[in-house]
Every structure is written in structure tokens, then in C-alpha cells.
Length: 282
Ligand SMILES: NC(=O)c1ccc[n+]([C@@H]2O[C@H](COP(=O)([O-])OP(=O)(O)OC[C@H]3O[C@@H](n4cnc5c(N)ncnc54)[C@H](OP(=O)(O)O)[C@@H]3O)[C@@H](O)[C@H]2O)c1
Image (tube, rainbow, N blue to C red; front, side):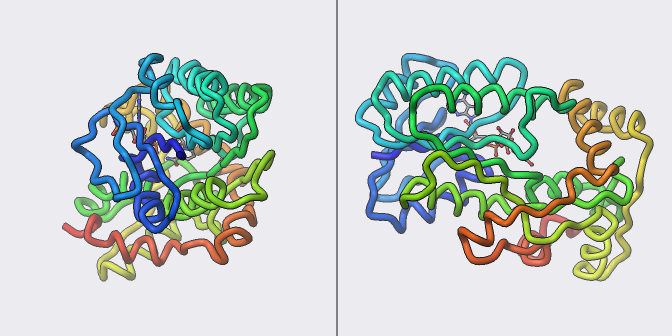
């Protein structure tokens, strides 16, 4: 039995068809079971990663677990608690979703929180695999409203490039790590095969939509104020700025080979934008 968390999320939704194609048995820990149509080889388990008793119950009889859920102030402790629950229940192998650049000294809080939980897993005595994706292509859907309205992607990353990864490829790697041998004790940085600037993303959308779309680079403080006024919490807006600064300085551009090595070829930005074009159309 393999326990899967985060099945309703961006990675989890792409994992569902892969689970359905497998001969393994899965348990899907979900807060709201009505959100998921489980395949025949998967059982739904109503639980919450902030509820220790439900996490402990979900881990019983499980051989491997995929741990992924959101990051927010206090979440690192919940990630650590889930690792401890896996250890206590006798789970043998945990595959953990972290972030590219996870580092205890990072200026990005998300990267510090993930570094803490990666270290916790590595010290746990469990067999582990750590997946460290960079920015998801799915994040670009956050610009859909301004692309529809003004034909603009706003940011503060300058000319910096990002090798966006499709969450479907993260799901593909997670599935491999959970169902095939050879991934024990590995940390996989995960990116797409090509880094693009936001101006290049805008140009691609322009061509696909047949209307002008441009990238407008804002000063970091103006960008932060805009996302906070759109409802993003202050701490996350600060992280966005720290990530944009790193992007502008070229630190986010390096491409990692793991997706191509494990899956053959990473999904391209053109494939993603074409598949999600409806979201950017007025
Ligand atoms: N977005 C990126 O570019 C990016 C890049 C690298 C790493 N990451 C990391 O990827 C992870 C996922 O982030 P995301 O925002 O993209 O996630 P997401 O798609 O919103 O998915 C989060 C999943 O976790 C579940 N979840 C949240 N809190 C839970 C709880 N208390 N108990 C049980 N399930 C819970 C959610 O279920 P519900 O349906 O119940 O809400 C959902 O299935 C985070 O750790 C993030 O730091 C993201």
C-alpha cells in the first residue's frame, strides 16, 4: 500500500491517471473526499495533515508514502510530524516534495522551511527520495486575468530566465520514485529543459492568442504591493520578491537533467500554453 497526499493539488491531479495505470494499491489522504474520483486500485482516506491522529491512522499498513502539501508559516512542523508518523508506523520509504534551492540560509522562507523538513527526513532513518522542483508552469495561470484584461504579464524578474516545469512531469517523477527501484537516497532537482524569460512567455502567448501580450517589469516594491492588494499574504509576497530578485540575477536559470533522464523529455512551455490557452482567452 502506497500513501499519497496532496491528490487534489497541481501535482496530485496529474498523478491520478498514473496511479490508475498501476498494479499497486494506493491510499489517498484527503481533507474532502468528495473532491476526488479515486481509481479502482485506490482507497480514499479522510484525514488532515494538521490532525496527528488521522495522519497516524493513514500510515498504518503503508510501505511507501508521497508527502506533498502546501507551505505556509508553521507548515514545516506539520511536514516534520508527517515524517515522524511515517517512521512510527513502519513505512519504509518516503518520497518528499521540496523545492529547488532548498537551503537553511536562503533568503526565501519557503526554501528554508523545505530545507528544514528535508534534513528532518534525511535524519529520520527512513529510506527517502527528495524531489526539488523549480517554478511550476501552472504558476503562469496566475497571470491569466491580466493577460485577458490588459494583455500584460506583470512581474519584477527583469530579463531573468526560469526553466518552468509542468506539474505533470513532477507527478511523473514522483510516480517513478514510488513504483520503481533506484531512487533511494536521491535528491532530484526538477526543471523544464529550457529556461524562458517572462518576456518570452508573453511573446509565446501573443503568438498563440493572436493578440499583443507584453511583459511589464515593475519595481519590486510596486510588484509586492500589487500582489498583496490582490490577496497574497505579506510573507508570500516577500518570498515572491526574493525569488524575483534571484531570477533577475540569473540564479534561477540553470536547467537540471533529472526530468529528461527519468521521463525521456520534459514537457515544453509551448505544450503547456497550448493546452491551457483557454484560461488566457477573454
Ligand atoms: N508552485 C510552485 O511553483 C512550487 C515550486 C516548487 C515547490 N513547490 C512546493 O509544492 C508544494 C505544493 O504547493 P502548491 O501550492 O503548488 O500546492 P497545491 O497544488 O495547492 O496542492 C496542495 C495539496 O495539499 C493538500 N493539503 C493542503 N493542506 C493540507 C492538510 N492540512 N491536510 C491534507 N492535505 C492538505 C491540498 O488539499 P486540499 O484540496 O484539501 O486543499 C492539495 O491537495 C508546496 O510545498 C510548495 O512549497 C511549489
